[in-house]
Length: 306
Image (cartoon, rainbow, N blue to C red; front, side):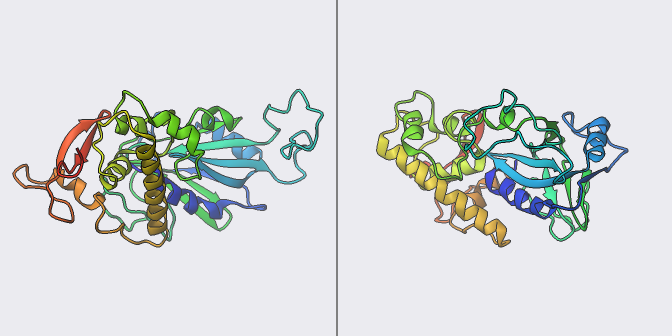
C-alpha cells in the first residue's frame, strides 16, 4: 500500500498540471473494466470540462491528495474568497464554495499510483512495467502538454469531487511529514492503553500518513515492540523524531529515484512472502518474526524490540 513517502512522490508528479492557462481534461481509460467503486462520474467530468477549470495547486495531507481546481482568472467572481484574514467584516457565505472552485481528491488504496509518460513509479505490490499508461489505468489527467494517469489494479483507491477542502482534510490528524506541534502529539502518545503501532496507524488520532511499513520501520529503529503501551514522554519524543527523519529521508530517496538505506527493515520485511522454512533476518543477521499488531502483520526483531 502506498504510504506517505510514495503519495508525496505522486503529488510531485502531478505538479506539472498546475497551470494558469491550460484547463484540466479528464480522459477515461480501460473502458472495458469498471473503475474503483468511489470514482468520478461522467457528469462530474463534464462539470469540470464545462467550467474550464485549471489546476491551481496540488495538496496532500497524509495519504490523501487534492487537486485544487479553479476557473481562469476573471472568469469567476472570487471577491468574497477572503483568505488573508485582513477583512474583519465576515461575509456569511465565506465558508461556502466559491463559484468555479472544486477539489478533486485521490486516494491510492492498496495498489493505486500516479504515473507520467516520463516516470512510472515502482511499488512492491506491483510488477514493474515500462508501458504508459500502465495496466489498469482508469483515467488520464491532461493539462496542455502535461499529463498524468491514475491506475489501480485492486481498485481499493478512489477519485472524487468535492465543493470544499475541509470536509476531507479536517477529519485527519496532523500530517506526519510536517513540523508537528510536539506537545499536543506527545499527549496523545503517552500513557495510552493501546499499543504504539495501533496508535500510529490511526489516521485520525495523532498523525496521518503512517502505514504498515513506516510504522514497522519507526519501531524497529527505536527498539520498541509494536504492542508496547504507556510510553514515557522521552520515548514518545523519540518516536516522533525518528518518524519525521524516516519520512524525510524516504521522500528524498524517491525524488532522486534511489533505494532506501540498506540497513532499513524495509528491505527485509517483505521476505515473509518467501519460503515458510526460510529464516528471515535483518541487515545485521538478526531474526525477524511476524506478529499481528494494530490489526496488521508486523515485522519485529525480538532481540532488540521487547
